Amino acid sequence: MTTQLNLFDRPTEQQHPFQRAAMPGRPAPHSGGETSSAAAGEMKSQAGRLRQAVLAFVIGRGVDGATDQEIGAALGLDSNTARPRRWELAEAGLIVDSGIRRRTSSGRKAVVWVAPEHLQQERF
Image (cartoon, rainbow, N blue to C red):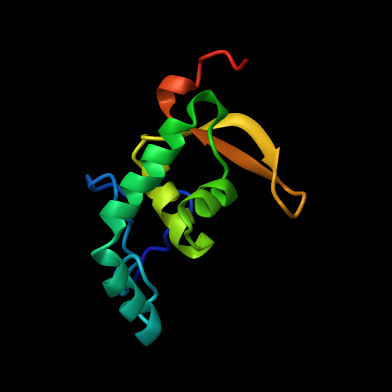
């Protein structure tokens, strides 16, 4: 008998801050399909550099922070590349949800991400 995993439970093992939880029977972070496996392999060599670029950009924005869309546009990254790097940084606690929402180009509200040290600072 197998145990059903709860989508909202955190993994119980200690993980590296940028490691995604593996799903049973599937290697993380991809779904196991041919194209997904190839994409994950290609990204592995670039992920660290891209995380650093995203982190530097968000820190550089100070208390104004940045949305996912702003990060991608500023760094010239597709959203399918920028968003996972931002997610990894957020999971590691290196950037946080500021509580502020800004409209995207489509008019929808988006989370503004900031470095933790900018969270409590006054916006002028």
